Image (cartoon, rainbow, N blue to C red):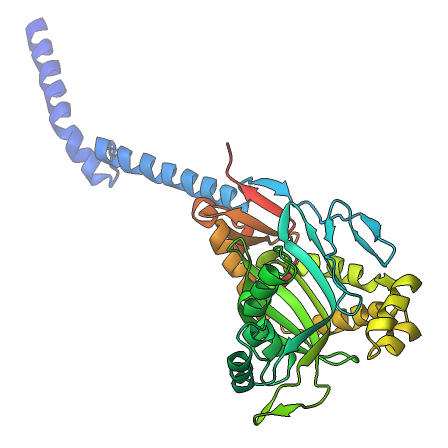
Length: 380
């Protein structure tokens, strides 16, 4: 009996086991699938990418930190003046500058002031230079008639203009330094090239802005004025041998890239020139042509100074741009400006290649005429 009951129970259990999957299928329900390993990896990767996108967005919104550069401030040109006075003439001159006054007559009185640290920073004044013939043909004829005469070797001034006078200055100055003053007094002005004619002065003569080679071989820039005066003619053998007189010779020079800074200083000095009564008495004995003018207004050179600066302010700035670019190339600078402050700097050559920020940018041409605030130097 017991054996039959046990067999029935076992048969029922086996039947239930077989029917269970069929009953589940008929009910329309299924067990949730177990995720595979590959599906798990994909879900985790998507979540990581979302986090990275959020991080990039946060970094973009943060303010950028510009690269720091090593700036050395530019030293402003500071000049203190002292008065030169030798009893004949007085004028202000930058402290520490030297003044040369050769022993010449009153009519040809001349003086030169210069910086002993750089003699190319110089201004020269000469009341009168003379002996220049009006044409090269007349000069050659005169030299043939009088081989030993000094005037026969001076270059002629043809035509009779300020520019023509300075075009032959080099030869004439070299002769004067050798055989008249007998010292290296007159600057030689090699390769004199007019940049711009700034107009005429009331006493006659043009104001020329020009470049030239200095004695040191450095390119110079300067302002030059002279008044060429033809007193008349004296013909002999078909040539006019009457010499020209050139009055109020004034020149101011400095190294090309520095001239804009030094011109106001030297022009100020010219404006303070005063001749003493003792000088005027001696001058009257030798020369009467300009005595009335000088006596009537001892401040005439102050007026000339104002007119020179007025002409200078009206100049074209195209040469200034060329000059500053040439100076930067020679000295190894790149010029950049601070986009936040507008300050302009001379940076070491290669700065724009090394620099990775955005604050300092290369200047435009019109910025070359502005003052430099300092220098950007290499770190370390």
